[in-house]
Length: 448
Image 1: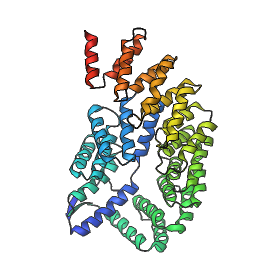
Image 2: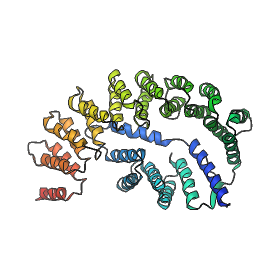
Image 3: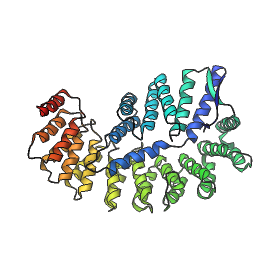
Image 4: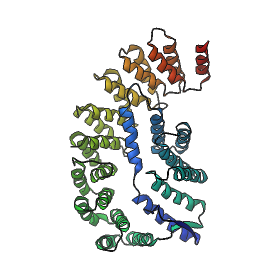
């Protein structure tokens, strides 16, 4: 990863050489960078699960929608969503992440000046953000495309040169990659950064020969940072032999956001084998650490490969009596496009015996506002519902929709004098978010 503390200068080189050097540096920077996106995704799911019926979180809802658009590669919609987020919630704790995803969406559309502007703002205003390293790596990529004849290179770039050389050797001689990487790892003079890059390259180019070495490092490497890098590299091999090692580590009773347990869970979720999904289900059901189990559910629910993810979430929901785990499963189902996921959420919202589970299902359905007929699942519930807290949850859910039927339902509640005053206040609060003319006229009429 490019050291953010190292001063950068611009070296003008022939275009092809500059482009090649930029590509190499960016690739290694992105590969070695931390992954705050994963921690941020977990935080968003936590906010969805832990929000109560009386405290809706519109910022979290907006952010989740934007991230969903990123995952679906809807770059234009994602850029618009994160642009609105930054304007509407300038003090939210995730503004730095929003700026990163705004830049990312712009870069994917080819709007490089806008991407650079968002990244410059992030780095200027949030220099200590966990997103700063990712932003620097993306900015390097953007700058290399804006000006292909130049590239930003660290002034003290000895490690970068070694990394680029090792990468080239591994690309051109995959059978010899393991031996070269082992030489680097055994070297007493190699820096930790060079060793990290060597482990990444071993997982990427070492082939079948790399698996035993990575497995051993994943279990026994005394340096925690290098051990976590080995675990992630082991998962990146997509070798079936990695799965049992990763399962063993992921079942650890200890868990932190940056830990071997966390790295093993991520590696399993990103592994190409369908068997990995079943192992993830086992961790969520039988794991020894509650945070690791809920983290596993969050990650598998966002897994891009669809191999049996919904089936595993159903399995977890049915197998685990723990209410918190069930709520995470319901929140996770909101990340899946499989129609069975929405059917399950609707069923729980209507018939679950536990009020908290029903409320969670309602909130999760509303987070898919604008994506199909989800409002049709919620509107009929209000009139038949007798629980006051669930009625409040439904009103807040209606407030997530830019739909005339939702507005009309909220206005109906405000007009109804038999409704409790606090519920009528909630309905007005939800209406106040809309700029619809009929809604604005209705709010004016209340003053008369």
